[in-house]
Image (cartoon, rainbow, N blue to C red; front, side, top):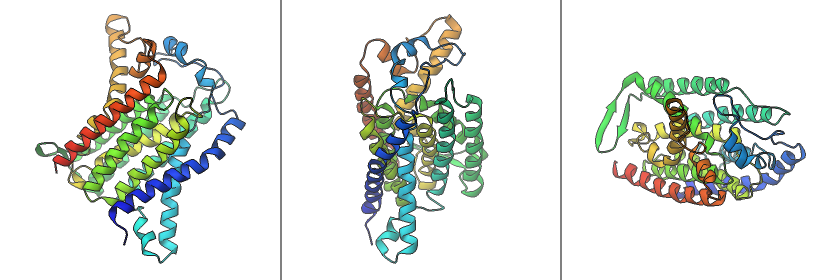
Length: 353
């Protein structure tokens, strides 16, 4: 029988290897079909051109293809499927040990990953058309809300989750309010997907976050969930291998929607179900995602109240670019902070057990 450590590390290694192997094929296809925005430029939420962002990134938006997030979720799905098939058709115990596809542990995050991937992919395909602006935001919000309502209901009605773990305190019983709480967490994480804005930024941040939850799930004895998170890290590192500046492609919505929706589920699975505080540590582990969302909110509120911008450009990482920081410097500092916050979140989560 394989040790729990091997059951986690082998899927991570396999996912990374698959990601590295399929990238040349995907890259060839994306460049052959010119899978990038045909007209550079973004628009603010009020519909006006995002002038400062466009000044910084007008050329880069048409330099590399979108849909690099396919590397991440395809690596995860191929790893999951290959190990499940080996377990089904082989009598070797090691293959059965490596199969992390589980109704109780990984079906929900995998389903969220797939729904996010497909929705984001549709948006990307519409974006790369001449004059394309992608799926309307309201459509993407409907997808996130509908999926998160169902998953929140599943946690409450099927898995019996009625409380949220808190550090240094007994779990807080909230009953059916678990459902709207899940919706809020999923929407907040979806909003944080705009962190995919500089070469290498989102890949490093999400890798640190999922690595944290790998350790948290492992400490809870949720080995299959830990293996899923580890496979996600492997896929992200394969993506990051080719996304380091200058990026060969961008993650775009097919990657960020898949990851943020899956992360919502992982946070709740490592909460009271696992005897932990997976939701409570999410703002710590994902502190840079929180900063990204709040910088956007603060920008809108400040502009509405005072008629001028708080930041040169939102979200925060683009503000740093606007004041003169080179993109790689922003990315490296975000990576450092991601590791620090991830480490802090893991320590808090483990000390609460």
